[in-house]
Length: 496
Image (cartoon, rainbow, N blue to C red):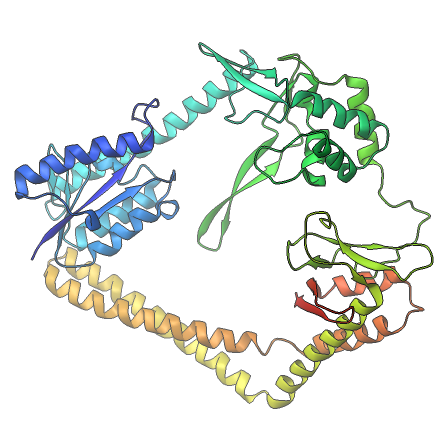
């Protein structure tokens, strides 16, 4: 029995004053009325897909991918949308993907004004034009919006970001958006800069302003990273920063990946709002912030520096020495974390024990593998790749046969489904073999590194800095949690 599904998505063309929920609800009413009029029944809830995330590409929108999966069902007759461009306003690759999926699954694109059957060349051309126009419109809108944001900040000195920095409130007066000092939070920011200029550390500053009644907006406590971000922000000088970070795109395999990075050439728009601190204090704090935390004359005493982390909260673990007592490791969030401190030598012994256990596992794997098993698995990968290439060629020929009229759509769908199943089986088989191969990767060099690390940690006369550098060469991170006794230490070691 044929059925229809519904896809709802808010676009930039909709009223910006309406929320996503309001837009989707309005479009759902339109499409349900259409379904009731034309199919004598509404679309059931399990067949409605609401896209609530914002994404420019198909990969960024999970619900549209669920729709594509449902379209593989031969009983799925069509997809209801308020207009075709709701399916995608992405690039040409996304447009081509959508055209192919709807065409070769024999699924209709149903809108209140018209139903499109992509097996009809005129409908296919019409949909292609609509999607292309949507892609061009998206590029145009993005350019216009970027230009508008830039003008709003640089020329009109508007604070366009949704959340104001701690210490300020955002006030909207008509089209103008500005920052004003928050009478409650502002004094804490001023106090933080004053104490930092006096040489007080970020952790102590956080504790002091919490004792005074300050509370961060989302986090539970003013942790050092939170305080340091405040102390480095030029917004407290009364300035706005434009494009302090920027997004770059790069190709990772076959995927286009976006990444945000710091922009060293960002613009500063001065005197846009009331300052909380003066420039002299800000510069003094920056000089102290840039100063090295460890004096050059001071020798590193912690061989696990930068490697050991708290298993309970994930924070870094530091070494602390009290005169006349054995050094201890403690979590940096010790004031809030329940993971107790532990003697340094007990942790070192636990690390040695953990490395010995890993060494034993690796040696067993290496000795049990004479090389023939590895060669066999590599050959299996090569064989699977060849089979996958062959299936890709078969699949491409299927599309050619369909387009040339040699195969009917039913024949195409049946044969394409068989090929897809075989491909999935081969891909899963390849993943399993690759996992087995990856287990063979610890080689004699890795075993040698473990032997050397154990020897270095067992020799207290070696400089901690040398040990630390070597450990970081093959250890990614270590997580510790203290048990009931001083010697009861749970340690997890992750190698690179």
